[in-house]
Length: 447
Ligand code: PFF
Image 1: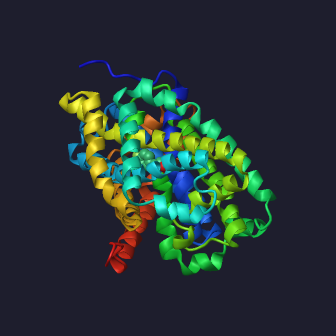
Image 2: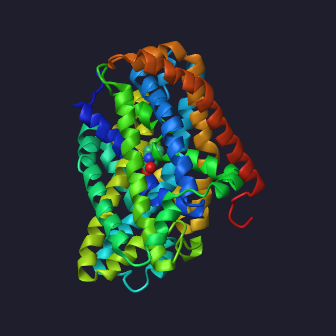
């Protein structure tokens, strides 16, 4: 067996993990899910979920990955618990499922790079979104996004992924801060801040059963959990790294980018619509596109260039996340069956392209794909991982957490107890509520 690659530097790992985490989940999804789930009440639960459930869960995946030093599926065999391979397999499936429609939204972003450059949406931002988000053009751009993702994965861990993510995080933060400040100066944005930042606890109490599972699953999606991505990335990690330090950094940066995106999108929606409009008018999946598109339109010629740059940066964020999804399955097949990396990456990308055409054809399908991932696949996959790492692998997991962390004993013990108790319960409740939600209102188009 050939020696496995490891990250050239600790920074390489952090950047890749942050690159995986920061993506459309933060920039596209978080703001619109906030808008459709009660504003600040959702933000409040999301923050708790990211910190109290997301952080322990990401550490669990790091433990499995670094300890096993192999892809997410075989990891469990290598840890001498082959029955739990089902966790890795479910993660793989969840990741494939998500990538199939993630790529469709990636295609929209590509469309908006060109749409900005030519000023195509400057006359009617909401109408433009409605016309390009579904149909043949969306299918074509979905193909382009998938092909680029496969191309990067084909070049391998160091060449493709490390390089692509180095510039993305700083540039996305700079651009979002600029846009947030600009939005703040516009007439009509003031009301957005209390909507976004001051939780309506009465709303929360009345809608607990939907806000909680959405917020917890959003944290999983956003942190790339339950898909083997963090297991796979951590498998390239050396023993001298501190998992708690790395995990905390990823959670903090990822959460900050989501919050910033909300600070851009929500005020801009208030400026244009006096509030968050319903999905058909641009408050749902179109929120990011419609809100910032209007800013660039208002800026005229300068807006064409700025818009193109903005969406190009969003594209890099989307790609670095999509790469991590594809990397999980590719590394499994390459490690295990000896197929070539390029053939494997393009083979999967092709199949997922076909599956995703449904979502590219009709946004109702896209919503359905997303709902299934949120309500069932993600919480189920994370739940099984948490049970494994807490109750099955427990003491050895504690050893792994302590490695490379000075004075990590207390933290590691606290981590184990959180995983065994409230994290487990929290994820279980999320899954339960998600399943009952789907059962009560099946989101299948036409039903
Ligand atoms: N975390 C990414 C985002 O928020 O856009 C999406 C994602 C990437 C999810 C990789 C899962 C994953 F394995």
